[in-house]
Image (cartoon, rainbow, N blue to C red):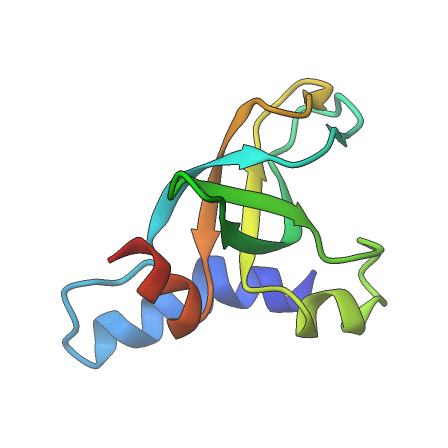
Length: 110
């Protein structure tokens, strides 16, 4: 959770102080490779995912592993964060907003 908070709050603030105009990571629509379930708790959830492209060139996302705050391997193995709004999650095949975290993921977007 501290790494996700850094991406959402600290990194944009540091980039602004450094004079950058592009403060936030790119957001792209992606197809959920499986169900992303969550509790309906009134919060936005950020799920660590692996972003790839299918044969049609569409972004797809799959979970990077266990999502607990202590699961560093999931964060280390991810190259994106799925943004899950309020509700019970999304089903396989639905479109989800995805924040790209790595340069390799950005190159997929260009």
